[in-house]
Length: 221
Image 1 (tube, rainbow, N blue to C red):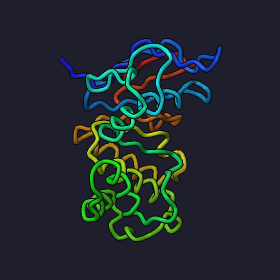
Image 2: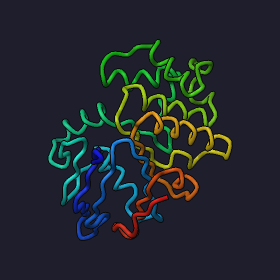
Image 3: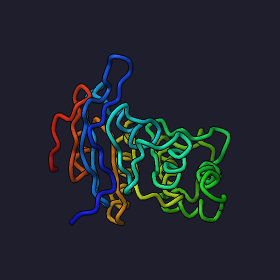
């Protein structure tokens, strides 16, 4: 019997009279790679914010690793996100005046204690040990994204949640980022990638397709 890491049941997110998500339900097994696709306005970003403990649904339940996070306080959600989820953003969100290794250490600061040696090892894992002392402005887009992945990994999260992780990258760097995600998945991490790119979605075992805030299809890849 597969173990579920994430269970969404009847999720609706309303803004006034508008439902950004409406009655969305699906499960994600531990160790699974899932893609979430859909056109602009389909609810992908809203879905990511709810799974990533950055927002709460108006209706329904979200059970993450056996805990109903839809009923938690904002402070509890921050703790759950810090301890359980590694976030990778399309826009990187690196601090411009900190070096690569310092940006990774920021995630450690909010979790436990910064450890430069451990942060350097995380950068080595993504092929950037020699760029550890560089500022974001001195790194290419692909290198910045790999710093984001190192930062997401540093606290050993169960779930890697990536929002359009290759959206700003050229083909060569897209390949490097996807290879890193494949390695993480092979190591047993659960990976959820929000993407508009069919080639990125094909890396996953299953794809959830959203349209107008509803689940249109769930397909095996």
